[in-house]
Length: 221
Image 1: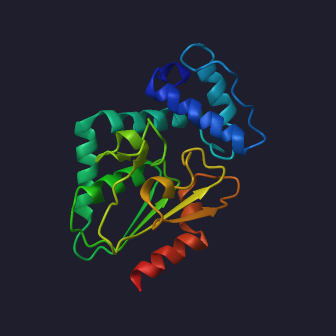
Image 2: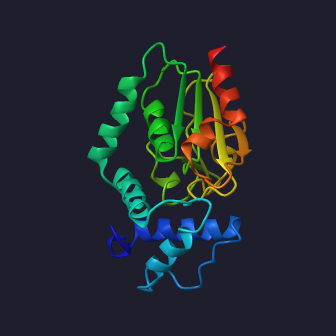
Image 3: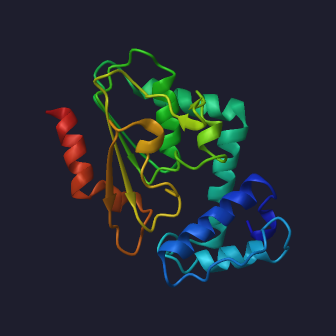
């Protein structure tokens, strides 16, 4: 996988969003210019090169970055894949499941799976480095789609009144472009900022954070 494999449209737009966010939060990342990735042939390579030095993509190979783009793209555009992936989550959730913890694209899958299973008994959803709040590319493509009230998108709550949802994001996490999900999913969502050091999007860093442990422990008590 190389820069040439990044498709125009969704993949280029998501890459541009990652680049802009990385530049906003990481002084070591050169910000994008006024050109768009769609119009300028060399800008995809420039974006990947800039991201390779960011906290978000620290240590991630170019091939892995492109694969991440394609994985997100395929999930949100291929309904057959989407249903199969979502079903795998539902197959793992049974009457004894109290908490679901999901990272990155997995948080989108987990959210949609819980929404698709009315009456599930999950007590807590913990999302880490989630892209759920990205408008147009993710938020507006969710299943079920958000409800637009007064021009503002309101996401469906993924459970009953007793479900506790905690969302954690690192300020430098480029996948979690929208750090605070409360404006979309409501004030009962518990929002927290963490600092994952040099690996802003790393799942292990999120899972070992105190706030994550506290959210999980509370659902099991």
